[in-house]
Image (cartoon, rainbow, N blue to C red; front, side, top):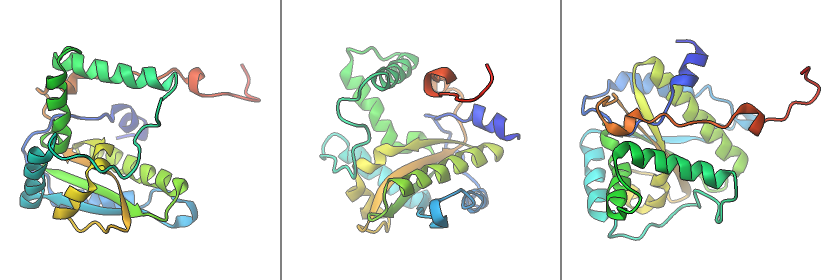
Length: 223
């Protein structure tokens, strides 16, 4: 698979089959992703990979806790009072997703139930938790993103799909009950990994991207 093809095909899959994932693939992808760039080559990423009974136990705990336990977020996923055009982009993404699921805006209960599927990893049998020491700053958090993108592109090459999930940063205490993520680390995000359930309605969604001229300024380039 060419790099461009992988970049264009990568998307957030929100419906996975129960089909197991070969552990050797997970290890191979993670090892290759360690070639991701990082400032000063500090490699700030720490990964806890989970599957099987331990992951199932976390899913059960989250099914009981979601909506009943107050989140304890590690950080604000979005800035408060998100201005334009970012607010509209986020709003459109949510509306498109719920439309694909047939959930109207007025049905808040159904929307909340769907949000809870995040904490089941949308049925994915493998999860990666990405964490980093709290003393790391924004440049190192950017490095985490580059590691995650590398993983998601490499998974496509292996015939697998993924979904990056910052939502797990809202429940670090529950995650730490099951996995040895140090309290000295920020739980930054997770990645759901598995085989796509092509019959899942949410997986029909293809989100748009802003045109290049809206996000880029070219100086010194010919017209």
